Amino acid sequence: MKRRLAMMLSVLVVLSLVLAACGGSKNEGNGGTDNTAGNGQSNAGGNTEISGEIVFATHRTDLVDNGTYDKYVSEFNKQYPNVKVKYAPYTNYEQDIRVKLTAGDAGDVLMIPTNIANSELGDFFAPLNDLDIFDQVRFADFKAYDGNYYGVATGSSTNGIVYNKKAFEKAGITEIPKTLDEFYEACQKLKDAGIVPIYINYGAQWPMGQWGRNSLAHFSGDVNFENNMVEMDAPFQLDNAWGIGLNIVRTLIEKGYTEEDLATNNWEASKVEIATGNAAMYFLGNWVINQIIEQGGAAPEDIGFFPFPHDNSGTVNAVLGPDYFMGVSKDSKNLEAAKAFVKFMIMESGYDADSGFIPINKNNEPTLPQMAEFMSYNPNILESVPPDSRFNEIANKAQIPFTGEEIQQAAVAKDLQAEFDKLNQKWAAAKKELGY
Image (cartoon, rainbow, N blue to C red):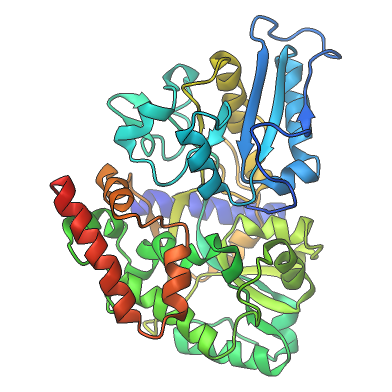
């Protein structure tokens, strides 16, 4: 498996040399906004048998605002002229869409919330087997249950340090940090130069997940770490992946290496801060690179990407994982239209390339130049594995949302062990109640 992934990412590097994501806005999801596209009236030909209006719920409010989704829908309507697509953009997607989904008002096409157990997917989503694409996409089995596929990944990415090269130059950083101590040293140099070393976007909440669940495999080197939690009564420990991530971000906050105003949601503004070099780094996936360039205004050559050295071993990990999975609500009154839109978005729209993802379609070539630099540091390549459905069952019963909220609290708590004790108590009680 590792050999196959290394080969795939090596190809990515070569292609990148030759050729050398989750925004927020003022829009709020409401089950269909004034942002509409594709009424089909000006298009001729195509599949006219499939028709109807569908609502597309999305976390990418930036793509609604800048017209990118309009471009996709315009192309979609060339094939399906009688399908009208409306957008429902959400700035706080995970929390808001869960409420909508429970009420049966989440729209027709949507990104599947991360807290739904695979065994419960059929309660909310329609099977997508008839799309006939699951032999062509990566992570095909991640949202499958009992022979049915309920979601398809919209892209693939790996977490790392996205940085502004000019900010590093201004701070006198001549070498990329290979260890955690070197990373802290670089942060101090940036701070001394009047640059915010790393923007963690504490106020936006969801980016804080990078220091917890999103990076458990990265910090532990074990792609089964999250799945193994279902066998543990006390998975939150200071000396495991949870402790590693929390201790690092707590250190960053304590030393003043992060944005000064933690409480305010500055996600969109932070892209400009990184692009201009007022802030130097993000710890996020490669998907954010294009957003810094296109929305922040950075020159492509000024933005780099390197593996995050979470310890002093000199070995760095790169976990290849899926982004959001796109599904179709089982309550959709226009299932065929919704399914057609999903297939188009995954296989033809170019959404993954535009978002800076490693393509989810195995037949498509990667185009992100910054991955060449990332791979030049020879990270240990790990591929995510399908999730154990019991994890979300336990998490839901324990009322641990894993939306970044738990990391927000732990990152600024006076006593991290006390925070972990609370989480462990809820986790163990939920396991016992569920019989696990």
